[in-house]
Image 1 (cartoon, rainbow, N blue to C red):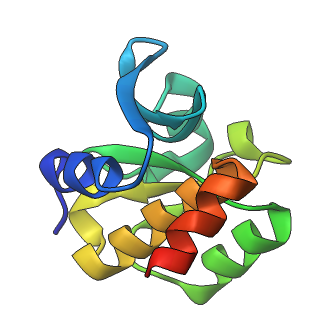
Image 2 (image 1 turned 180 degrees about the vertical axis):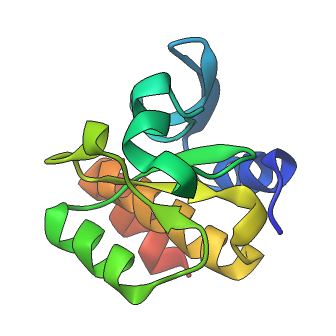
Amino acid sequence: MATWDDVRRLALELPQTEEGTTFGNMAWKINGKAFIWERPLRRSDMEALGKSAPDGPILGVRVENLLAKDTLLDRGLGGLFTTPHFNGYPAVLVQLERIESSELQELIEEAWLACAPKRVAKAYLDSR
């Protein structure tokens, strides 16, 4: 089970990441672009999800493109889902209480790579 402390630690380990807020919720950004963010479910989300609407903390995670989004959702990783609000947008939602730390780390890194400037992403990948 992951926590907001895990999210913060993993995000801030990535180069040039800044912690801030977006729409009053926690967000982590690179180059001014949020790649992960706190995303409480809204009333419209709850209505759309019905009884399957999850409880607990929800993290929004940017993905490279819609194909990557579909692939992640099809893999059936614990805690990943979407809502109609995110139709046509390259992001997934994550129930922190249902995702393993290693999976969370991979999602955060991929989100960062999707938003990082190419030279920064290349330097990071070359350093590993």
